Image (cartoon, rainbow, N blue to C red):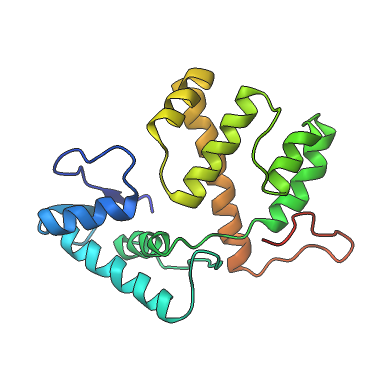
Length: 202
């Protein structure tokens, strides 16, 4: 998607707004304003983007996909590909990471990750008796993935603990693994027969 980019919003929106809420807002108040710029085609307006993402989300809902569903997006690229991803986000659809987790839990233990941290993530427990850094990392990841937003207070605490550069690097790593999960889903990758799935089903 190197040839596409979001255009600047006409003005700032409320802190904590989700991507879907931002698109819907500008689709109502500034429908002709450019939202996505793509090479070799006209810009996609916020009105067009809102309608397209709503249509994709409605199709997914009609097909039975929802918050607990898992879906990979395969698209040839361009502004429509980005709109498709946003449509998926509107339906709160997650990418499975069981294969990735099963490959990384043993490595994490070898490198000294505390068992309490692994169990908190693995069994979806509330962070308890963990370090401030471990607690914030887990909370940041969960809120971004599940709610598609990050509260101002949690953002400020993450920046205080890791600095702005460290925070960006942290979220980038999380995003990289989401991307890998999408690729593994798209190619229907499975664990080897001799490797058990370590992440309990949700």
